[in-house]
Length: 452
Image (cartoon, rainbow, N blue to C red; front, side, top):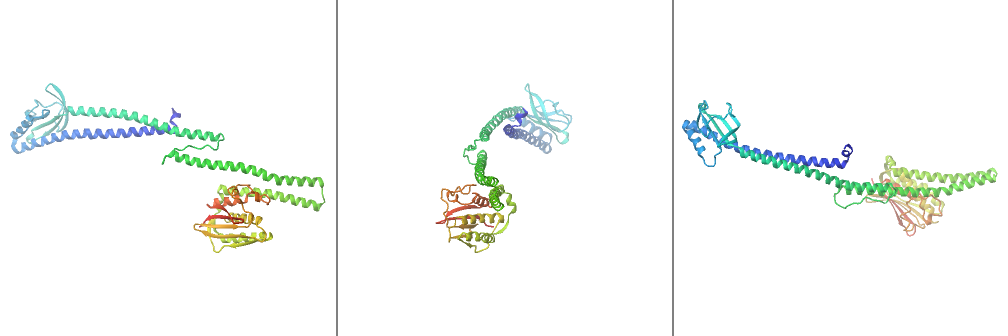
């Protein structure tokens, strides 16, 4: 039983049933109060009106006037169940349709509920006892047996209604629990299949506007899409790391084995060691790039956000990469006409620009120009690097930001396949995007970041 009560669906059903029963009880109580109260007020208003009329008659016309009014009311047609008794100060009857003072009525004036025998039948009567001038006593009452019967009828009707309300509440709670469990069971079954390895499974939606379970399914499906993308990216990255590290490590091992086998003189040995250090540097570079990508993906670098002047960052990047580009026979042009600011990490933005310039330097033909431009496009700042190299085929553009992916044109160049991945990650961290376009010929890489 305790385990059953711990179920959210059971508690939801019980809560629904409790609220339904409570609302029914309040409605029934209100109807009871209004119905019986109305009947009581109607009877008492008539009795009070009669006592006032008889009292006024006594004051104005004496005892004879009061007796005349009482007798007239006793003889009135349609009021056979009315009770009247006018007595002297010693409770001796003067006139009325009662033979004696009722035992249920005390000496204190006020309202009484008396059981009187009239015409051989005991009837419940509502009586008002008042004292008139000269200590005359007056009893005026009405037979309320029919009212009590009506009251009992109302009570029985409310009892049956309460029983029906309880039954409906239990049934409604069961249906609510069943409907909730059916949707939850779908979520549980789908989640179990995902746990067993079927990452492509998704929660079904009924496309009902405003349905909370559909909203939950959409959010969970989005989360599952992200998880599947991350898992597939991790698998792809793991394979790519194994593939890309194998080459420099194999070369390093080969050089060291050759060095041990040949045992050259010191100068040749130093050259072999220098080549081995270069291979180690390539491995370290790959791991450093992966660590930076992990930091960016985790969002930890957001804590380093500050005001950044993009023109200043672009000028420093151009100054750093201009000798490298010119060494390969090309030129670098910088177009940054104005200071443009944004909130971001200046080091990551500088590294993203540097990666774009490094890629352009590797493919730029001799005597061609590489252009770095900074401009504003509505609410965004555009940092664009254009070159006249071979460009990237359209079918490869969606994949070049994948980690370790290298297209056909880049296979003969030095690199790890992480440059554009890092640029795209920096763009995502800042709420922007990386767009790759044809430069006819060459490539135009546009880094779009939100302006401050």
